[in-house]
Amino acid sequence: MTAPVRVLLVDDQELIRAGLRGILRARFGFEIVGELADGARVVETVAETHPDVVLMDVRMPGVDGVTATRRLRQVPSAPPVLVLTTFEDDEVLAGALRAGAAGFLLKGVPAEDLQRAVREVAGGGAWLDPAVTGRVLQGYRDGGPVTGRASALDVLTPREREVLALLGAGLSNTEIAGRLVLGEGTVKTHVGHVFAKLALRDRAAAVVWAFDHGLVRPGER
Image 1 (tube, rainbow, N blue to C red):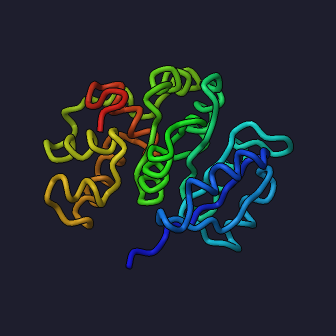
Image 2: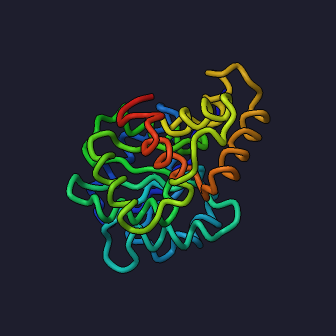
């Protein structure tokens, strides 16, 4: 039997957390291991509960989601962060990506999309909601240079290009391995080579690079 995906919920609105609890129930393969109303204790709670993914609101009183994400990503072996937001928060979402979030999702998406996004990010993938991806990526770029953006695509081998395109589409290493009929260890090696050759610091930066160079389009998987 597959182990449930362990989720830490961080949102200041009890009503939102109640809705997330209903969507991420045990019957669907999830376990809520903790809840917080702001980002102040995210690092400590992660150490106590060992979630597979943190589902984080960006706008909260006290410590906001961007600050909490930045703090968490400084912890070795920290779980990935999937940011929840509203349609108007493009600039904040770009900040969350720069802080190290693995992706973002709009509040109010269908339950199936939320479940799929949480599984993808928990499995090592990235998830960018296509409804606002273009604008958010522009905000990400405007916040500073995208490392590796000027690198030529031809520094990559054909296989590395394939891997980068699938990274850009949000696939996890496991999914990439299945799509390309490779071992996960081989995929991990290719991902490492892509990051090194393009000077990319994380999967979010790889997604931006893939979008910028036409390897993937918003909503494509």
